[in-house]
Image (cartoon, rainbow, N blue to C red; front, top):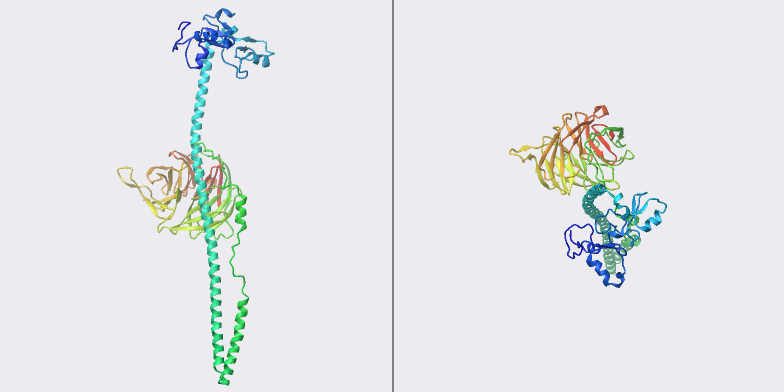
Length: 564
């Protein structure tokens, strides 16, 4: 312990530290307590009080000035923490009724009726226990850990928020490009219409001009012939009659040309386009996409219903071979038998739109925000606009089989109902052909009969269903990762995920739907023939409503299962 007159800062532990020096991060032992300053003072700070007239009259206290006889140090134990409400007062009072500390003003104002209000230095030895400090310290450390966990979580969420902002901005840019493309297409069509009308009018005017010029030449020739035959009355008579006939014909021609309608072109704006844009405040809505918590348990059935997807002009029984959800929650269904793509309002449980496809569809997936791609049996991929009405757009002729299809970052991943997975760009150029696993010493075929394909929930892996009852996992470059299987499934065909780490696979000949974890663990069949499942082709899960849609071969009804 340093002596009472120590003026050097020290790393020693003192019973009482100088309050002013502590504010300067200096460690000096206190020798006095200043009543007016309400703080402890070292020898130097006590001496400073003698120098300044305003401090000269301050009263210093030491042990002899206090009632407590248990104090063993040279100074009284007095609180120096100032009240957070009454800034000029020290928190030196204790209310035993409420177990709270405060300054004299706090006690006078809010603890006036309390019977156990005392000055802390008078009762400190009776109310203070070192064990309470240790217990409080443990509680504080526990709260620190909780807050540190919250801070780590918020840091992670800030990164997710920043990444989501980038994704949202990118989506807006892409949407803007789509709108610009649509406007450019509309502009091009309007320009074509102007050019077509211009050419039509120009051709008509040139034709009439040429006809009028021909009539002028004929009339001049008739007049000249008539005048040159004045020596021969008979000839002149004939020429005159021919000229009169030409005059009559010319009158008819002139009359037809005089009734010319307005010739100027004028563009009339479609006010609906402008009005639609005026009604909008933004390009869309911004919402919060809360990540779904992983689920490791099997789903159970809460309710069952049927969705009739047959429409008036269907020529045969429906065959919903593939389905997927759009971003706004509408369900797209590929009807193989009727060669149609159908859009279903899942809330209304009815088909709200459809378009005829130039071939038999076998798989559908979403591509850009308002677009879908459909694989056809005629070796083509048909793109469909998902605007107000389903509309066919461009088409890619691949020259080879296309069956299952998935999309990410302007790359199409296409199975061929055989042992090949192709990667194409959006113009149909083949980027890669994947057939074998090259990770081991021996090269071996990955697929036997590749069927439908999707991305996993984190979109960093491909899940490809093989007719040989396997779900094969590849990375986005086509490198083999693993295979998953379940003995309860036969002839696997359709596949989807729940957004929580689970994969649903339908068995065409086993008449069931199997639930698997992405890590390969199988949770068994959650739907069987006892639930009305027969020859299931497709599965699609709506994680917002926890509903699984199952399309079946040659059935007008899609089975709808509310899961829990």
